[in-house]
Length: 85
Image 1 (cartoon, rainbow, N blue to C red):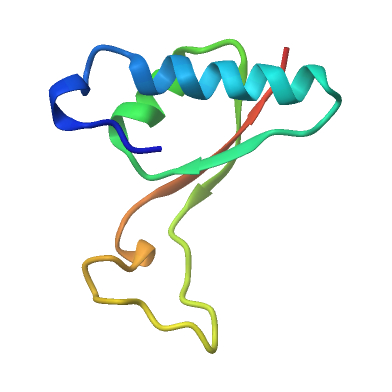
Image 2: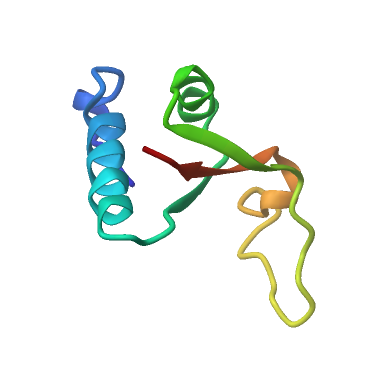
């Protein structure tokens, strides 16, 4: 999910993410989203609908190379969240 800088911080991304997650969950699918964004993590911690399923640093998979050290997710905390109604 990408929100243009002029619209960051007003909740558009969170509302869109929640709407899509609710839609697919009501259809009977399991909806899991992964993020390393501190703002998204804090928002999901406060929500009754998002449950943490994974927390930690991801390791580099054999055969895959990071574009750069900066983009490698092993350098930051990554969380996965399951949406429940």
